[in-house]
Length: 334
Ligand SMILES: NC(=O)c1ccc[n+]([C@@H]2O[C@H](COP(=O)([O-])OP(=O)(O)OC[C@H]3O[C@@H](n4cnc5c(N)ncnc54)[C@H](OP(=O)(O)O)[C@@H]3O)[C@@H](O)[C@H]2O)c1
Image 1 (cartoon, helix red, strand yellow):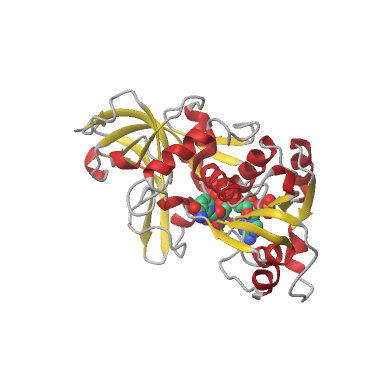
Image 2 (spheres, protein in one colour):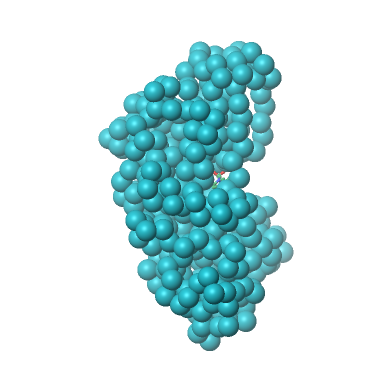
């Protein structure tokens, strides 16, 4: 099976001693990993994990050279698996994609059939890319909190990293579902934009960083979605209401977690880990079906910036520095 042209463009990150060289190269079909399905990539997205995959000590890339890009949205051009036929619109993300096998920053990709999600009715390819891994993880976070009993009538729900990809989409999903949604951001300029979306309040990131030495704070949140980690997650645990949970998915400000046990043993707080990369394919397809319907983010596709492969160095640097806002989409054939 191959329906991939002899030469196509790809953005490649390659380790060279202590540095990672990044740039656009021509690849051939033989450069792509094995897989039953060939895809002409229409869109990818720029995720924090992609930025980590393209720096020396990011601890994400498992091969070198690597085509990063943990998100793939495109059209099947050939398939050895009868489940897919040329022309099918598909999404692929998670598992090894963009980590230990080439990902979406290329005009073509080859992917195992068992990792592919048919584009659900109700989403365009561009909208699916605007959701991407960030929005899928946001939807997983909301679904996990709700499976534990969270409902809009329970009270305020906090989202951190609210100007970023995952956080921004979590805000939009919660607003669409009628939650009293609060946003934490480190960007004062983003606060007005978040308010205009409909958030009930904005908390500055410095409030979480400050800390006052107390093991427990006022009971504020009926639930929380955190992709920032470091000082922010312990602050959330200290300010969750009795019995509330936080869905923790990220480490945008660092991986350390310094907390006491008091939120757990005195308030019954729940720390709910979210790992979108290994969600089994049946659940992954079902959750995408919900993203197209009852978990659809409000104003999906509004808060996006498009780049081509040659715009990736700037986009990757911006996301790593915390300067990026919303979702950055990589336009290939889209
Ligand atoms: N567990 C999973 O399955 C999964 C899936 C996707 C992503 N993630 C993780 O979730 C996090 C967010 O990913 P993303 O793709 O949404 O990234 P992103 O678009 O860059 O958003 C991250 C946001 O975090 C905030 N932030 C706080 N401290 C920061 C710091 N020191 N440096 C940079 N940003 C900081 C910023 O928002 P404000 O300025 O508004 O505070 C930033 O926009 C990452 O850690 C990523 O690895 C995990």
